[in-house]
Image 1 (cartoon, rainbow, N blue to C red):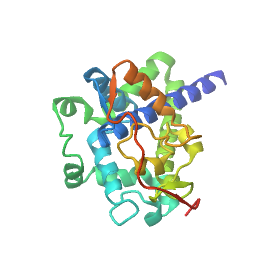
Image 2: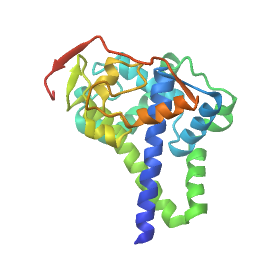
Image 3: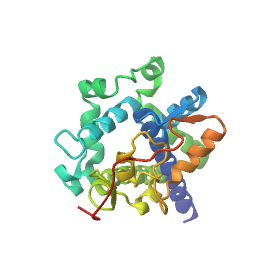
Image 4: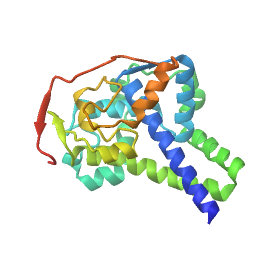
Length: 250
């Protein structure tokens, strides 16, 4: 029983690490240039993203930027308004892969992230990275813990990312005039990404919490990174100009 609890705890920790990498590195840094990371920090993020998620950054960026270009309109890769809540919540990874596998879309929306030598040698080989991550768990904790932790991590990460798009464009508050929503409870679970309405109102902000009472967990990690000169903010402070209180829900 203790071994199972340990495995679940490890899986949840690894899933959270993946979500923090996603929001800080893939989302705020690469997709919107809200942050600039030092070369060493960038290298660490590339390796950890590869081992914990298997995601190719330029593909993730292309999917996300296309989402902003066609938010809840024809062309949005994962809109619950167009595709339905259940489709986006439970099949988000397949919707992501549909765009990620489109060379034209990746070339258009991630033209500033061409593959380099390290991508060709290592980071474009997703299964190798994930295999190394699982293998490390196996070496340290044994195969039972590694297997259970991997399942927990995968489930939490996929469901959490699905909720960001499904819940985040379906239910919640809309303090700013856009179609995304804010859900503080979701922000606690997915490293701040539940404050989705705020993000659409201020895409280049390194901080997703914009009002009193809101909390962006990843922002405190960003602050530490800035203090240690591992990262630099694009804007010290940002105030969206599109404030307009809208009804809760859709």
